[in-house]
Length: 355
Image (spheres, rainbow, N blue to C red):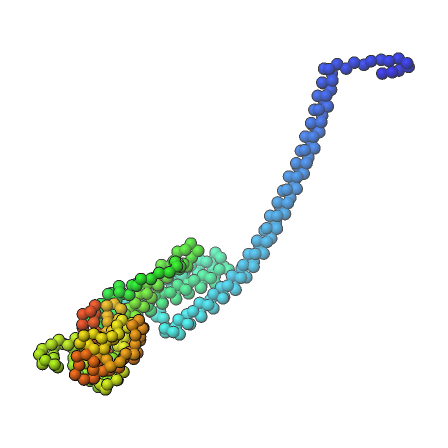
């Protein structure tokens, strides 16, 4: 330091310098810590405030959505009710009234009491879902009525098949065919399960379909429109040798070229000539059942053609081992000949009873 022409020196020891630097550094750290704390506090407060605003917005949005869904539930329930009513009308228009009554021996469930209790509980806990609960109850009741209807038709078809001397269980077993395709699981709930009542309905409808299809495949239409049968099933005198012989079908005499009809629905499995039969057509009806039409003068069908009962398949003739124009008609089960007469006499009445 220079003062009044004199120079003076001030010495600061290293220890003092270190001490002073330490004090300054400590003050600086303390200041930075204080400012950081203040900044963090402000930032935390801002975050909490923003989160609070977000929660308030979310609550407001949720409340508005709930109100919207409540309004939509009412509309959706009304739409579903109209659809359910339309489905029931369509089913009843095509197959008739579904039975509401219960008969002894039936095993169809009755969910009326359970459904009413469910509607009551849902209405108390979730009032806005009352309409949906009622629709569910209507669907269950509808499924049970349809199951009852299918079971009764299946029972009638089964009894009719037994009256014709056939085994209905064999027809159900024989209705299984090689089938395939992409897997499409029917489910009535989000977890992929199927309500047992709907499973039962599906099984009953499948059984009804198999039995009625089998019944429709039984010969029921006269293969020729003629006044009488000239030769019956069983033993007779052979027209050529005069000796006793077994006749495996019915003979229908008529004018040459008269139309020959399929006795039941099925698929043509043979068109051609067989020894003794001459020109011959065979129709497979499933379940081992086959009809044969022999001595024809002409063919009106081909192998693989699906025909219905009463479809014209050929013309009457006298080909093969024959003494004159007539139709030789056979019914065979697993290639064993059976008497066609009971089928032709009883099947038509049976069909009327089923309907």
